[in-house]
Image (cartoon, rainbow, N blue to C red; front, side):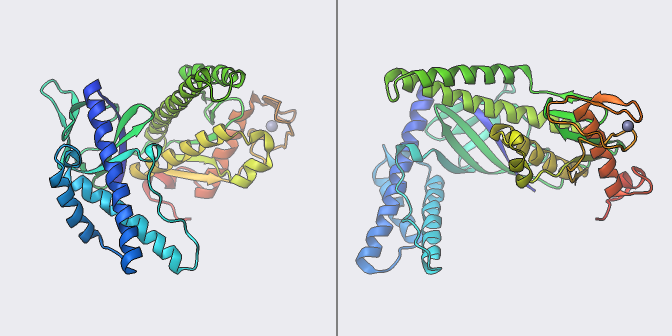
Length: 387
Ligand SMILES: [Zn+2]
């Protein structure tokens, strides 16, 4: 199986300069390759192949050791393949009778990454002090914030070195054998993606945004207000806009990290995880739920949960969300409540608990009934259920 792992690079000034320079050269080469395709087509009415382009740009690279020559040869090949791909897609759409735009020449702000084959121009390694480094040809030994281990026995195939705002990242595409299945725990859980808490579990656990995320979000609001007051396009406005962009990217990273940890814990602990099957239609129908950042975050949670569970041989069961917040998880009575009512109180059986936990318990019951109506957990952990 193949997965991509992304890490932050900590570059020093000279490494940054070198990376910027090489990226710049790659962009020039990309545009030149596109230009060559266009010219040859206009002059001859015929295309030019990847192989012909490689022969041409290989010579260009040799002839200019201080500029193009700093670009790794295999990396240049990958670049030409990117051009080739863009071109093929263009002609495919043309043939299909569409009117596609000509493949874009890449401006300064539209070219952010370079591709490598691992072991050829880049190599990930640990130094004698056990620190992880990325050796990049013509750049040096770059520090890597190695916050997550690669799966055991994995092979790094493809490497993308990427700039985002002023930071550099590396994305490692790794291949590894089918992972070890986690030992079964015979436990099941229902999860409500709540209104009050981020997640509510059927065992009563409430999971909230970590404090640092709330702090960042508060700062986001402050900066947004500040931006709104400043003169659009002015020096201060641009400074604030830049701070905002940085903060956004930090929040995205921190949130992903948080979801990784949360979904890891859930998959370790439970064999069967029942969640609401929220469709986009449902979200937009409930306007109060249609908070885009909130939705996006939950979408990320769901996809991480799905793939971690799949790897571990655990099961995620989506159940229809209708009435899960209204039904009493104790006795089944419908207890109608608006979104503002935070506690579920049942006059029939006297059950009183957090509304989201009540919903999570209903979700669990629904999920179990889908899996095996007679003996809830018994059949789940021993063999894969069929439905
Ligand atoms: Zn009840």
